[in-house]
Image 1: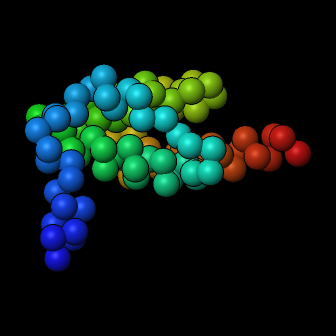
Image 2 (image 1 turned 90 degrees about the vertical axis):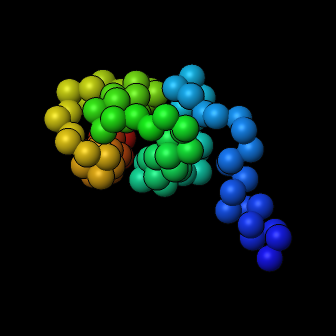
Image 3 (image 1 turned 135 degrees about the horizontal axis):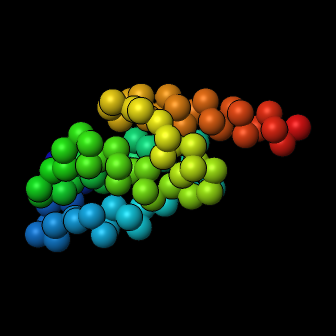
Length: 99
């Protein structure tokens, strides 16, 4: 029971996350875009002062690399789930272009 408590609240250890910390959260090679986006969003939710929806989307786009950054920059995503859908479509397009 104590382990479950620690696991649930381990992020609340007094070390507040900030924008600089979010900029360091990168996609791991074994992650799909969706898995990465969900993990990134979870990290963002740990911030003491939460970001507005627009700041959240803008910051997530800013941490992308290469073609993902270029393509997501021009997107008109209104929420984070739209951003995930666009990223998944981009991944499919990139895979098709490799063939």
